[in-house]
Amino acid sequence: MFAGNALASLLAPPRFYRFSGVVLPWLSVLCAALFALGLYSGLVLAPPDYQQGDSYRIMFVHVPAAWLSMFAYLILAGAGFMALVWRIKLAEAVAAGVAPIGASFTLLALVTGALWGKPMWGAWWVWDARLTAELILLFLYLGYIGLQSAIADTRQAARAGAVLALVGVVNIPIIHYSVIWWSTLHQGPTVSKLDAPSIHASMLAPLLLMSAAFLLVFVIALLLRTRAELLARERRSAWVQALLEGAP
Amino acid sequence: MNAKRRRRVVAVAIVVLGVGIATALALRAFQENLLFFFSPSEVLAGKAPSGREFRLGGLVERGSVVREADGLTVRFRVTDLGQTLNVHYRGILPDLFREGQGVVTRGRLNDAGAFVASEVLAKHDENYMPPEVAGSLKTAQSNTPRPAP
Image (tube, rainbow over all chains, first blue to last red):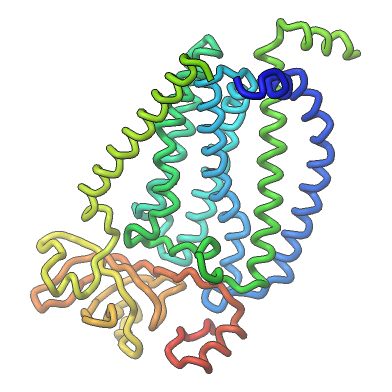
């Protein structure tokens, strides 16, 4: 393997466990600060929308959750790929750890979207391409979680899950481009347009702050879950035993 | 990368590519069913299904909204800036329903060629701005949507 031992030692479970233990408190402080800034600017400083009034503010939760539901899936597929090709234990733990987090963000995006959709569109749910593709994403996560718990051997489960995750990756571009390819009820992209984003700066700033805060929630949850997965998977190894003896 | 790992990478690449192509072909085949709505031009050209419900989408033409005396029945015209279609609807309209804004209605054509809607959904655009900005945009160009009261 390229760069051989250096990379292998960075990806070694004990090393990752120690490193993540050091960064977690700092990430938590940063995350709390970003939430305070994002919520204050989003709920107090940002002006109401010219069409939707105050109802649009749900996007400060909805949009980051939807972005992260897709980002988490890319992490799942990427970790699955590494687990499948290089049989890296850390990648297997990351994949097992990220799936429930991704499912939670997907559910959050669907629920906040429905809450907004009822007063604004006039319907909780419509079968348009964007909403349907996001629902399929939720089912992909649930299928992955189900497959993981159905196979007793964790290393076999990781490989089987990785195949499912990689097959499902085709859904991610469909979610993103659905509003461009088909006439959907869901509006087109706002922030990722190539020319200037069609959102006023006073609303874009809180959206980006909240997205950063949500991203940190995602990273913190992923680190915590991956650490727990590693401890469970490596419970008979020397480094976990040493940790247990060191604990009071 | 040794031969075994290279084989795995190739296998994964083939699977992902295969699924991608299969999905693309399936989506192309279902293109028509994935369209959430038809525009008035498409309906008048006979592209919409007759005899069953379908969705009609477009902008609510300015000055076309008429409310009947019973307070529930609404008549308006939906336009795609080319063709227009008369729409009848009895029910509660969503918050974002206003003249000049996008709308998606479900229903069927009656014998008189008007669209009888059983559901009206407001389609909103991807623009977010404070009312003052919308106001100054409105003075700059006269065809921007009316700001919320």
